[in-house]
Amino acid sequence: MKSLFVTSEAYPFAVSGGLGDVAGALPAALRKRFVGCRVVMPLYEDVPQHLRDGMQFIGSISVPVAWRRQYCGIFETKVGGVTYYLLDNQYYFKRAGLYGYYDDAERFAFFARAALEILPVIDYIPDIIHCNDWQTALLPVYHSLIYAHKPGYENIKTLLTIHNIQYQGKYGYDVLEDVFGIPSYAHSLLDYDGCANILKGGIESANAVNTVSPTYAKEIMDPWFSYGLDGILKERAWKLSGIINGIDTEVYNPATDSMIEANYSADDMAGKAVNKAALQKAMGLPQNPDVPLIGIVTRLVSQKGLDLVQYAMEHLLEQDVQFVILGSGDWAYENYFTQMAEKYPEKLGLKIGFIPTLAHQIYAGADLFLMPSKFEPCGLAQLVALRYGTLPIVRETGGLKDTIVDCGDPNGYGFTFQTYNGDDMADAVQRALSLYADKSAWNAAVSRAMAQDNSWNASAGEYIKLYKSIVEG
Image 1 (spheres, one colour):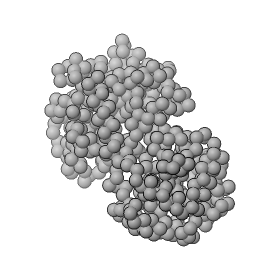
Image 2: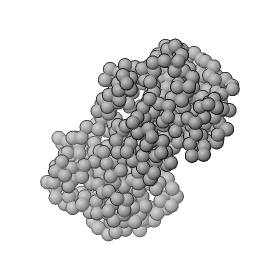
Image 3: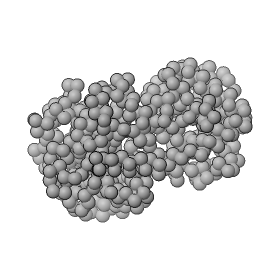
Image 4: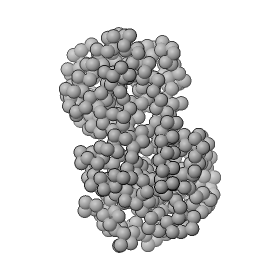
């Protein structure tokens, strides 16, 4: 079986979020399971020069974009055994950053159409094209309307993965013909709630749709989570499923991680205490091995449940506990946590920004990891925390619910709460602090946490099952 993974970002070329990490890891995991997988993405200006130097120009084509045609250069390279095709058009992609431009609709309409047009040039006809988020959701639309009956394209199936339904690609109706080239008889594919909605078009047109966790697949049929798309998702529930993401267990491995103070493993945990002391020192906190240390690595935005943290923070800081926080985002949260760090300098260490090395040090040095998200399609931080023997405290939503078992269960390795409520979150923290005081029970929970298999290998197996069901169905 052969797949083509079409994405607007991928590690190590250009990354803005979780999609880039998935696109950098899942194709390699599929190849290890003997599934052919190649990746297509835009050649952004942000792609580093040392990666450009390894690319080979293999040709160019003219891509139809509604009534006009645009140049598309095709560059090929390999990373980790995976073949990547980076599509070049300087008018669309020679800009700083990946998204947020006035003409994103046209940029990614071009990209979706180009990903289909290059197949004869690269001599690769996949069984399934795996699209991701709204930036590639026009591809299933174009395939069903224009390509499905063309030689070489007729047996291709399409899968659309929704990584975060909040971002849908909504535009005025004028883009349908003038920018997308969608004929009037097919406007209904994208027409939704008074606008042209690209993600809705992809949901309608793809052979199957999935999200990045089973619980999130259920949640997005609820208006609370769907950002308006619950109606169409309920109608198309038969094609919707969820597969949890994995993490790169080589990048996140406490036994080999070069970013942390001391390496350790489930068989020899001595380095965990060394990392805790180093983290406390780096964040200006007293180096006390007995005080429970809670880590937070996040974007400082409301989605991440920070209003719950804000509600309970001073009450929690009155206890024998320390916090370390790394993140950036909304000014209100940055200002609040800055004030708390100044008010409780021996209990709260704060770093505004995102520093990958410090993130690894928090995963390795903290005892607990707080992640009380309002919604979380999958979440990777809780999986990384488990890998480092740092027990997560999470709200039961999306992938957090699917991946963390509360220590109230004999097989538990984290702490969960259900309702989006500050008192309930604080209660989960209290239960975590109580278990921390029972070293025997605590160490057993840490061992269970580190024994969890959250590698991409397991997730790749589920994607292969889904691919087969689509191709054979």
